[in-house]
Length: 351
Ligand code: NAP
Ligand code: ZN
Ligand code: ZN
Image (tube, rainbow, N blue to C red; front, side, top):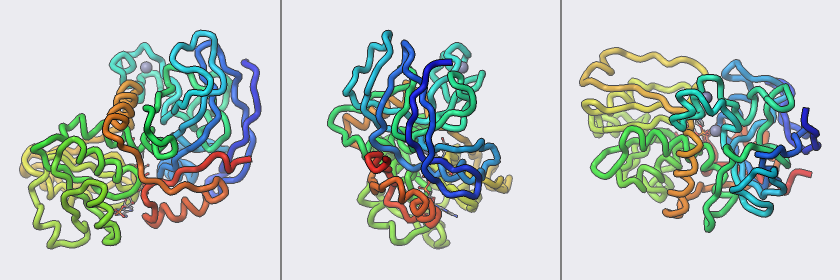
């Protein structure tokens, strides 16, 4: 067992308790490890699902957080790519087997031997479960540590590590580009990054939202058009016209209405993870020949590619910076779709 150092953190002790101060152990860096002081951590809706055990798989205590940007404090003897003082980042993955077919294809998130997720995964070094970025310090293998391009604001870059890659990867996979009509459903953390990427890839970008108050922001962020998804007439106007629809919604909603927006061979790509299964009418899928697909974050190489793309195109997240003791209020606001458009915790507020 490696030596450890204590780190301040915030944890939920049960599915119904609020997040509160907690102390965790971080391993001292081994030869291939990068140790960092966490500066900023984004707040993903998955954190809330996990803290409240909405997917039924959480282990307590939970220290969430997988949109991490920090300053390197120490590196192991074999680390080549990072040095103390560098700004570095960590997303949803901290390890995988590196040898299976999926890992060899740079799809570590689908590791056949089980990827280690940043929180709630099996901690192969210390035993127990991994703890995420609502903490002061983290130690991660160099292979799962990413570079934040110079010139990008570190705080506004944190959400790229999950919201960014989760929208970038499926839009690339299903061909969002000039000449394609792409819908993004939900203007939250993921959705607002989806709008920015679809626009940056040159696609005709349409935002579907339930919130009329977000129309102007949707256009400012890159949407060519905005549809209020609860308005039948507006939905009818676009029926059967989309090549790709990326659904980022976190709660129960009507995906049959979204299938109706697709054209021949169009793809409805799900990235949102509502806790309950959703019913699909077969007719809406077979006519005229449509696809439903899903996507989970992205591999490490693609995550670095996305960060580099953001560096080149000056893309970051629109954030609301919060102190750590605001986190429980932030969760309540997220449930009301009241986030513009990602909360990011300023870790300097954690003592
Ligand atoms: P978020 O910031 O809370 O955004 C979700 C948005 O969905 C809301 O802002 C709202 O947008 C819309 N929405 C909420 N409830 C709705 C309802 N009942 N009907 C229709 N629209 C509704 O959440 P997020 O952090 O972007 O995460 C979204 C989902 O993606 C979560 O389930 C999360 O767990 C999942 N996720 C998946 C992956 C992956 O790899 N697949 C990665 C990260 C997160 P409007 O106000 O515009 O309607
Ligand atoms: Zn996330
Ligand atoms: Zn593997």
